[in-house]
Image (cartoon, rainbow, N blue to C red; front, side, top):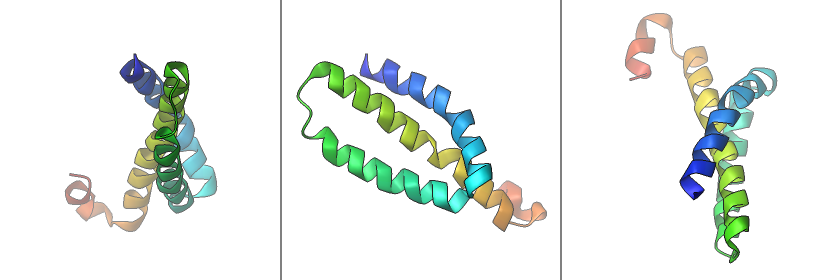
Length: 89
């Protein structure tokens, strides 16, 4: 069930965080994703209730999934068009 919740949150969060990355900047979103994931993983160790684990999994997936669109956006900003194929693979 936790994997289902994680996958659903990742599916929902990816397009939303992609737009957020366009507005705020890719680097800020990436920093938030890394810092936020660290905090959530730390808090994860104190959760004992099953339903709170599901809630934490949902939030973790949304925060983790915000990294991917921001990362791809930053790569396309930094890397010249002829080298993008190599950079994205």
